[in-house]
Amino acid sequence: MTKERFSYQNLRVYEDMIRAISIGEEVASGWDSVYAIVDHFARASEGALLCLAESSRKRQVPARMAAAGHSLGSILECAARLEISAIRGGISLDEADKLVRLLVPK
Image (tube, rainbow, N blue to C red; front, side, top):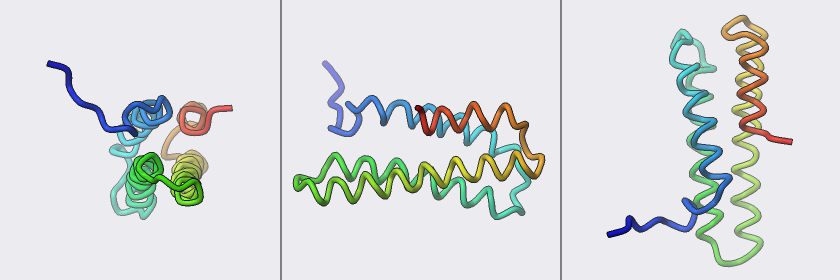
């Protein structure tokens, strides 16, 4: 018996995002939780996934584009949080760069 998948789970970008965010979450778990950046990263990463799934669910193109745009905004917020952490010394610049490239590939 095969496991049924939701439409958004068939998207390669969804799988890539899950991988990148799980790595980012591992890194963020080492940050001091008193800093707002920890909560911001968690909320932005969750929002990115939820909006991507919502985008694949929508039928009308404008609604799909809006949800995809929200997902992209959350992805960019995650990338910004990683860069801020690197600037503040929470992670190395190389580590931040690798994670940002996973989230925002060329």
